[in-house]
Length: 313
Ligand SMILES: NC(=O)c1ccc[n+]([C@@H]2O[C@H](COP(=O)([O-])OP(=O)(O)OC[C@H]3O[C@@H](n4cnc5c(N)ncnc54)[C@H](O)[C@@H]3O)[C@@H](O)[C@H]2O)c1
Image (cartoon, rainbow, N blue to C red; front, side, top):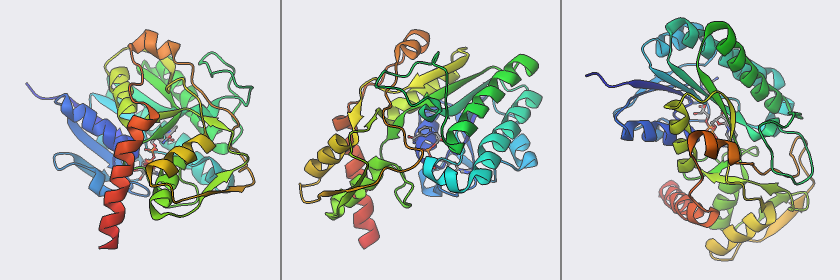
């Protein structure tokens, strides 16, 4: 019997490579579509088929989707602060690109689509955990584009019968997460700087909270969602808030205690508090984050040590 095939858009990236590994472990054939703008071909294992193309390339997307049972759509313009400066490019990739993927899936009769949305769609409210039923209030072009992606999924479900689920990832961290721009996420920047003994920059007072969820747990959520028939949107987080200053302190300690931090003004578009309510995903998929921040930081820092050692050589 032939093996089912999954297309992972953005599969040469951070979450995408963990996702592809998760499907491969279950015996799936893996195809990646990625333009390698932030992804890296070294993240792709030998047996995966890598197609280098832009998500806006209608022909390449249709061809890549055509014989895949399931599509996990992760390719995106991923930075909140950068989206304020380059909003047209953000909408082109995140709205236009998502439309191309949905259109291709609907035309090809793809069984199932999992869409990567984001906790950024939630309103800036007091410290209450964010629920899927809360009224979204996106405050950055990135967040607007992700919410639009969710709406497109719903529209294709209604109009074309395409089965899909949107997962709102909170702050994902782990090995292979890029730190090579000012817009990168806190964990990889802190990990790299901490290991180099450099100062960690904390924006605002550092008391803003985030829900840090480990990449392997996220890949598990994506796989569970793909093989389920859940519809709508689901949060993917731990339900445990950690403030950015506490994260910086943990990384300083784990990297030998040399680095210090300095404060900079808050960045536009950054939300104050962000924690997932995870009741819905537990009920619908039986999924729950298993890895604590400390347990996930250990392989993350090991990966950074190795990477810094090889780039020095
Ligand atoms: N990392 C997080 O904390 C987080 C949180 C919420 C949502 N997300 C979403 O999860 C998904 C994966 O993010 P990630 O953290 O792995 O980022 P990443 O940058 O590692 O992965 C994105 C991948 O998409 C590819 N890509 C970008 N633009 C493309 C284009 N025009 N055409 C084809 N490929 C393109 C990149 O080369 C990269 O491999 C994204 O949709 C992101 O918005 C991530």
